[in-house]
Length: 387
Image: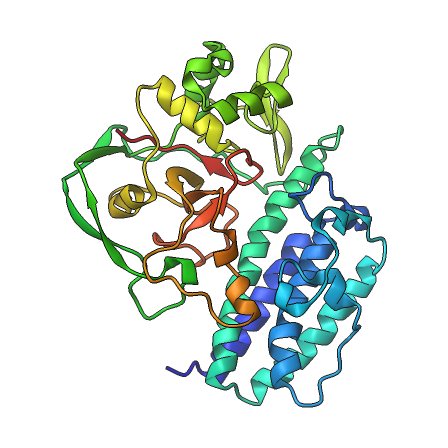
């Protein structure tokens, strides 16, 4: 079905503005920092999301379009081998040029061209690419928040990103578990709206009866794990996880600091005391799995999570599952560069389900499959238990 022209234009403007709003509290120096390989400088995010629209839409569908700067294909290409060479990920923070001002000019230039193209009317092919572009930028909006938090949270002064930027998220339902009966269930996206290709291939799975917790694990529950010395109990950990703990001297969730005998953590508002009733976040898969073992339980599979998702509240934390990130039956990559979007990453990663407090509004659904390597925890990741 064709999307109305003004609806597309309004959506484009709103999505692009939200990225700028996220960056608005930053100082110029904040835009260029890359403390670790997994974190990209905010300047790179706003350039890359602009490059996406220029490369996949304007160059192919806007007659007479002139690139803002041909070198930007090398600078802002993320991982699309089809499109050409690129700056390696670890070097994104070494780019003092283009300047922040240059990248903002680039963004304005592309936005003006995109608005003209949309106002002239879009073909079905362009509309599909626009929808992908909107969702792609929304993914980067969440990454912007988490990368900004990492940049500022690793500054020894623990500067605030913005006052009232965070609030303590707490469970709202009474505790306990939900029992899901043994049966055959359908998994995967089924509808007329947008979804990513890794959600397609709706298929049936058999699940034995299981229980899944209504609530996510709280900070207070995890403090009990820490105080019981369970970071040192090898019986709870995967071998790789225990190596990760030892090699990186892991003793608590990311951003936690013991100050005068009390736990504090860095938030987007700065360093504050840990609220025991707040929902735990910034946890690796290794930590989530070890905690589950300590409780005599386990993490749910992504299929168990999806089947039960209508029966509990979700969306404040990305939730680790026990499932490896693999293709669904019949998965096919799209032709060309767009086919590199998800399929090439289906190895050595774990699936997360849900969303987080910094996920863009309307971006999440119960079939959404996020994925990260098991040691990563700079996203808003939490724990829900099953058995």
